[in-house]
Image (cartoon, rainbow, N blue to C red; front, side, top):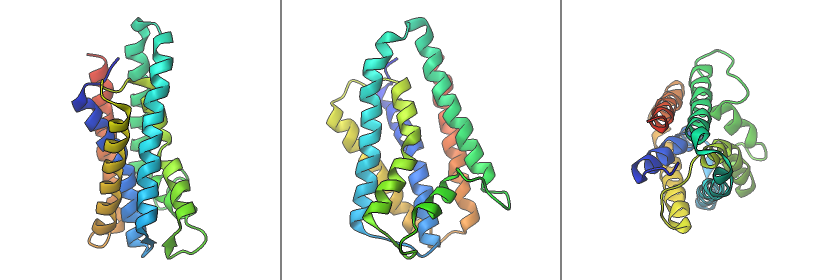
Length: 195
């Protein structure tokens, strides 16, 4: 099933909320993210989503059309459930090991006050795992591949940059609310696939 352009933009927005949360986490932890690291995270995130949509283009034709709607729904629904886990786990006294904030802290090991380009690549790969599953289960709108990459990279760049700025002004606890918003958006997208 081909995503509409609106669904595609909503999907990119939902996926970039993890990057936003990571930006808040780093800002609250006084970790400096260089412009190069910012570009690397954006580019890798954009590339992974583009790659997953490209893979989906080749995988989806082998899935019977009667199952395709449910396959796409299932992947989006599972991702939404993970986002709920991410949101609610952060509210516990000892959050789970697979939350966005836990992953962000584990990746930054060399110099705790600077996110190196290498660590930025690791972080973006970990944050892009959800992009891989979603793209494989959906087909991008009929737009050029380079535009998919540019839109995704730009959205992740903005999300991380805004997260770094926002982290200076809000408390650490409230960052998990964005995982909750991401879960709601992904649930909506999943149910739209059934229509």
